Image (cartoon, rainbow, N blue to C red; front, side, top):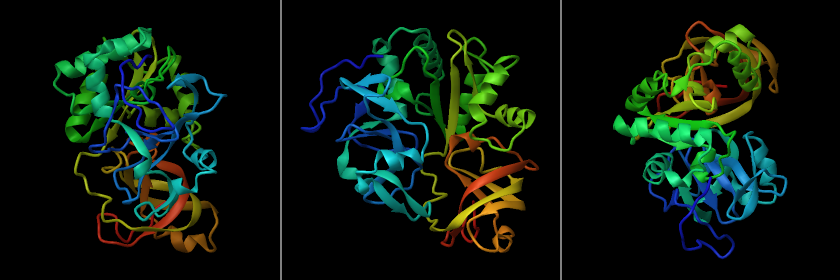
Amino acid sequence: MSAPGPSTPPSSRLSTTSPLGRALPTVRDRDYLLDRSGVIFKVIGDVHPNSHWLGYVKYYPDERGDRTLFGKTYRQNTVVSKAFGILADRPECYVYSPAIGCVITGVPREEVVLHYSCRHALTALHKAPDQLDGSPVSNDLLAIIDWITAQGATDAIGVTGSFLVGVAGPRSDVDLVCYGPRGYEAAEALFAERSLIHPYEGESLTRLYLRRARYMAGSSFDMLLRQEARKLQGLTAGAGAHINCEPLRADGDRTFHDVVAREVGQISVLARITDHRQGLVTPAVYGIEVETVTASTIDEPEVFARRITRLRGYLGAYTGAFREGDTVYLSGRLVHTGAPGALAGSPSS
C-alpha cells in the first residue's frame, strides 16, 4: 500500500508523508496517533486526561518488523500489555487514568504529529483508490467502501487497522468500525451483503476458533463459535480475508465521563451474564453475577465476589459476544467505581 503526496515534515526527528493523516480535530476510539518518535498508538476509549491520549503501541520502528512506513521498517504489536515494555525508556508514556482506574499507556498530547481518523480514511480511500496496492484484499476493501458510500453511511462507518496508516499487505485483515445505532444498522446491512462478505462456515470455522481462542479463555469450541456468530465479521468475497466491524459508542456518549475507578487487585472468576444491553458496543459493559472465584491477588476474594456486578471491557473481542444467561470465564483488574454516573458504586472486573 502506498501513501503518495507531499507533506511538510512535522518535526525534525520524523519526516512523514501520509494523505490519511491530518491535524487533530476530534479523536475517537480506535483512531491512530503518530508521535514525534515515529510510534503509532491505537486510541483506547473516549475519556482521556488533559495531558495524554490513552492508547497502546500498535506499530513501532523495529528492524525485526515486516512492513515499511516513512522509509523505515516497522513492527506490529497486537497485545495491549506489551506496550509497557516497548515504551520502557519513555516513562512519559505511562499515565494514570481515573476513568479506568489504573496506570496505562498513552501518548502525551504535545507529542502527536498526525491523527489517523477512521472516518476520514474511508472517505480518503474512496476519493483516491490509487493509495492502495491493487491486491485482491485491497480491491475487496474498495468494493466495500463503494457500497458504504452508495448507502450514504460514510459518517457512520470507518476504516481502522493496517489500511488506516498505509501498512497493509496482501494478507492483511479488513478492520472496520461503526458509530452508534445508525452505524450498527448500516454495518448489519453490509455484512448481510453476500456479494461482498461471506459468513464463517464449514472449515473456515476452525480458522475463526484459532483466531479467537487466545482471547476467550475457558470457552469450548461450540460456545466460542456461538459467541462469535453474534459479531459483525466474515470473509471478503474475493480474497477471503478476515473482515470485522467493531461497534463503537455514538458521538457524545457520556457513559464513562463521570466514572472514577480505583483498582483493588487482580481476580479471575466464572460469572453469569445478567444484562447484555450495554455489551453490544465498545467499551462494553455487562451485568454479571459471580459464581466462582478461581484466582485472586486479594485476601478473602469471596467478600468482593458478591459485590462484583459489572464487567467492563475495552477489548473488542468481548464486544457483542455474550448474552444474558451465558456463563463466562473472566480474568482482569478488579476496580471499584465510586463517582456519579451509570456505573457508580458497582465494582467490576
